[in-house]
Amino acid sequence: QSRLLFKKRMFRETDESVSEPQFINLSYVQAQHDYLAGNYPVVREDAAQMAGLQLHAEHGPGLDADPEGFMAGIERFVTRQVLMTRPREDWRADVGSRYKALAQHTKEDARTQFMRILRTLPYGNATFFAVRRIEDPIGLLPPRLILGINKRGVHFFRPVPKEYLHSAELRDIMQFGSSSQAVFFKMRVAGVLHIFQFETRQGEDICMALQTHINDIMMKRYSKVKAASEANPTGEATLQPASGSQAMGSVVGGNAAYNAKMEEHLKEQQGQLEQAQQALAAAQQAESQIRCDNDALQSELKDLRELMAGEAATRTALQDQLDESERQLGELRNDLDMTKSALTAASALANEHSGRAEVEHE
Image (cartoon, rainbow, N blue to C red; front, side, top):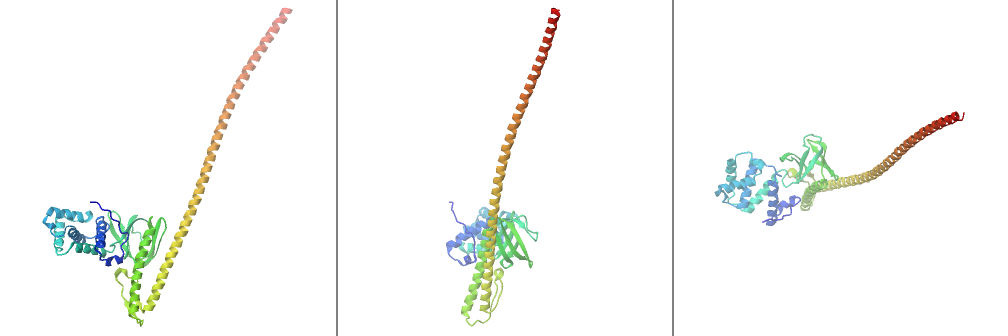
């Protein structure tokens, strides 16, 4: 039976704390679809574990009693690119052992563990965008590539076959912006700032995804500091450790100092966003003006072409009239020559008759 499911546009960190069964089930369906579509490249060990989890989530325990059905399930739940890396029997043995280890778990446990493995990938739960390279100061990115945006940062992939290339953490992205045709990132690579630019019509969506994840992280850290400040009203110095790649910078010193720094950073982020929006508005206005100028030039060019066509038609008509006049003049000249010849002949004949008449008179 066919089903229509609306896809979640973006997975956020707050989704990980949701335990509602229907939400988990729908999230699993989307995550599984994206995984089988090749959006999440994984190594063979992870592919074997995820195949076992999907088999258990789909069929529960006992499917290994049907060798043909079990192998068909492996071929269904392992992406073709990874499946071709070793013989089918090796896959059967590896996935089979992992599948048997899940016998005491429920289908819901298998779905939850499957999504947990995806979340541990650097690019797990990312939103993907196909782009073209415009400016690459490093010179390592292919002409066509896919960008993945998640709570950890921006991830770069070769599109076919999909191959993970590089990641830039959120804390390394210093500035970003977009126009109707492109998006750019100013980010640190090996400690050096570079500007990367890509052609895409989804620049606004890319910037929105980045800004959403940055805001989530900043608000999470701000909430932690605020809670700590309320629990420790004396204002003594505290230390908030960074949590993996989500860290936007360590928090050292008193809560008041950190709050001031946080507010300053948020204002700076807001200022950068407003500057980017102003730059986008200016670029769109310039683009609109260029289009108006182009339309005016096209109209003038059309008028000139019509005028030239009219003049060419007039020139052709005048040339035809001139040719006709020359033809008529030629005919008149012929008639004149014939008339002159006739007059000459008549004059000669008259002279001859006159001579004869004089002889006869004598």
